[in-house]
Structure formats: C-alpha cells, structure tokens
Length: 411
Image 1 (cartoon, rainbow, N blue to C red):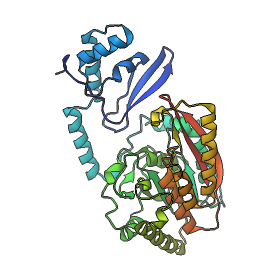
Image 2 (cartoon, rainbow, N blue to C red):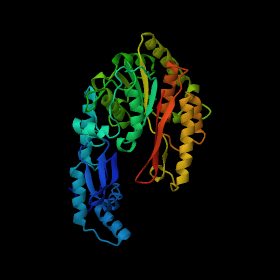
Image 3 (cartoon, one colour):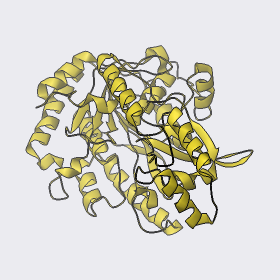
Image 4 (tube, rainbow, N blue to C red):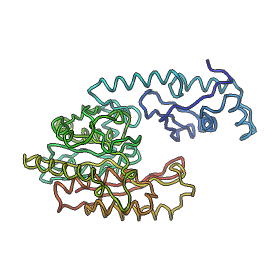
C-alpha cells in the first residue's frame, strides 16, 4: 500500500525523454527493459518530483524537498496519486516488477525468438506506420542488377529519430549492393558482460519478419571459443544496438534478407591498454586468428559475407559523467578526434585505432570501440586490401546535457 512513508524508486532502464507538444513541454517515460509497453506523458515540471524517486526518500521527504526548492507545497495526496500512476504502469521498482522481470527472463530463455522490445516505443509496430516512419529517412530503391559488393559497413545504433539520416547513408549502400549469403553483425553490449563476445541462437524479431540466425556458422564459432557462446545470451534481450540493425536490414531487403550472426561485444578496455591492444592478448588474438581461418573457409565455399557494426562514437557532457559545460569548441574538438580515429578505421588499422582512443583512457567515451575493432579485424580477414569510405558524421544533442556522435562507413 502506498502511503506517505512509501519510498518510491524509478524502475531500472526507465528513460526520461523531454519533448514538445502543442500544449507545451512534457517529459515521456519509456521502458527500455521491455517489461511494460506503456509510455507516460507528463508536464515537464514533474521531473522535479522524479529526481527524488531514488528509494531513499519517502513521500513526506519528497514533499519537504520540493518545498525547499520551489517554496511551494504539493499536497501529499497528489504525490501519492502520482506514485500510484507510475506503479500501475510498472515504472517503479518493487516486488511486483521483480516478479514481472523474472517471468520475462524465463520466457526469453524458453523462446526461440528474441522479441523486438523497442517496437511501439522507438519505432512504430504497425507495418504501414513503420514503413512511413522509415521512409522519412530512406526510400527503398533497389538496383535491379546490383554489381557492387560490400565487405563491411558501420551504422549508428542511436535512436532512429536522431540518427535516421546517417543510418540511411549506410543502408542505402547496403541495399544497392549484392545481397550477401551471411551477415556477421557486431553490436555493443551496453549492460556489460564477462565474456568478450556474446552470441545467441535466437532469431531477432522485427515487424517485417524475423532475422534468422545462421545456426551452421554459429556452430563453427562455438568450436573456436573457449567458453559457451550463449552463456550470457540474456544480454541480447534488451539491447538495442542490434535490434535497430535487424530492423533496417529487413526494411531494405524484406524476404530476401540473408541469415545473420548477431554478436554483442563487451568492453575490451578492462583487459587491454594502449600498450597492449587485443592483438597482444594471447587468447583474444587466437580467437581472431581462428576466425580468419573460419572466414576464409567460408569464402572458399563462394559465400559472400558482410561484416556490420552497429555502433555510436563519443558521448560527451554531464549526462555521461563530464563536469564541464558543452561548448561549440568542445563539439569541434570531439569531431576532429572522431574523424581522426575513423580515418584509422577506414584504413583497417585496428590496433592503431584502438591505441589512439586509449591514449587518453577513452576520454570521449566511444562506446563502439571494441565492436568496431572486431569489425575491422573481420573485414581485414576477408579482404586486407580494401579501404573504407566515410559517408557521413553527425552529433545529436542529449536533452539532459551533452551529445552523442555517430557515423556511416562502407568498405
């Protein structure tokens, strides 16, 4: 029962998004964990309340804190009603949400499908609405007899509304090239993980149909790993970095979309350094060497392989832990640095790319560092002479202070 002594705690992975409507500024609560498909829209002023929903403050405490901040008294019953609204929509951490979470994880483990948990939230669920949404960024115009063959591609994984035009640059090139026989996609595991690489046998659901996992190739990679590839498969459940790639691939190719191998990559920085990039770590280099042998064996079978990375670049500002204001000069310096390392990536200089970013302990917080490194190593294994072309680069402001950068590259 929710009373004045209740200490509300906002559920993990709740995203608070500022927005503008005809009636003024609002905030939108969105669940990135996929435990509720509801979104809550409320006046921007309610963020003053939510900031105290940390599980430490009772409703009485929150009322006092608001009084100190604004010199206004919010009646207890109004706060209680607001908390009840959040509870009913499953946006509070409590015993009810714990049970829902456990059930959700059990269903994931039993299912052959990795559900598209961001549909209806980050993009429309209805196919007609979705196609209209996607076509605002990219109209599918396939070449009847494409001759171009792509070996690799880099696309963003930021919210499609923010990065749609940059996504489109990558997927226009992919859509107008020969359809490969296999896609190996590297995404970022934002929730970490102990394993360097996290595989899954589950097909990725999209509104256009499922992205089917190539079980044969999965089995071959299983043979060269020193651990079970899907031990931490649960981390695929809520991760958006590959869900958005699956959506774009099915959007451009529909029923012609080939099978893929989705791989989440964790943070290599915890065991690597500027002096010791992954190539200097014995078990990591063995994986890449064995992978090269595997990839070349697939090429001998005349299989066309596309290596795809769904990554973002720098994360700057207070939202991401910085204690300095974002200025035009900061944005310019970040762009210069991003493009410097992207040029190294385009030349397939994986170690130089990795070491350059770690010179300053990855001070710009490039989240795609390890995933890009993997993609570069795989691309070089397929075609060591190829070079990349940077098609686009952009920065998107974060409403809570800061910005995220991302790019489009093809090889």
